[in-house]
Image (cartoon, rainbow, N blue to C red; front, side):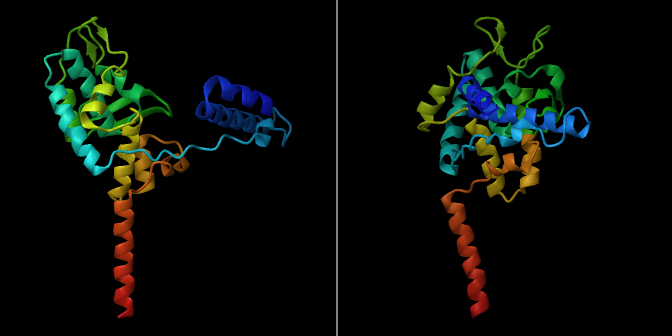
Length: 240
């Protein structure tokens, strides 16, 4: 089993391999409970999963301000495809959704102030929309017989990627290395810094367990320093 897991790592990557191992382990565990396997014969128990990579990259308040200066200019572009791609990016930041969850949205998935995702990473789920996210969707052009929200007007087909647009945004906003997925991390990290609880953040992100949510709950140095100062103020008050 360890050899098979190593081979899976080479073919899919550490994250996907871990997820596959977790699913297989649960399946074989259920088989034991239901009597289809002998007890304590689950081969996945002896396999050590890959160490989770701690993603520290998220946009600071200053970086978010620069990001916010660039997006409106591109969203006002005469190029309708660029405007549609920027709408994807804006919704990623405003909802914390996965890239494909937003990119593949169809109009039937939009129900006023929420999105009904039919096939997210953890199964069907509801994403609640703030007023700004609703406004982004309301401003999209809706065309007869086109089911998707985001349209490539040049090739007359749904947008399949925004990778061509992403480097332009990074360069104009001077953001250095940043993945599209880091917008999800930014959403979660700023929620944590706004004192949202991990269960609430997990619900917003659609996590199946709290361990996944904990990876997003990083605080930047400014907030850690502020928390330290508040604690010291409280201690000093008691000492006086």
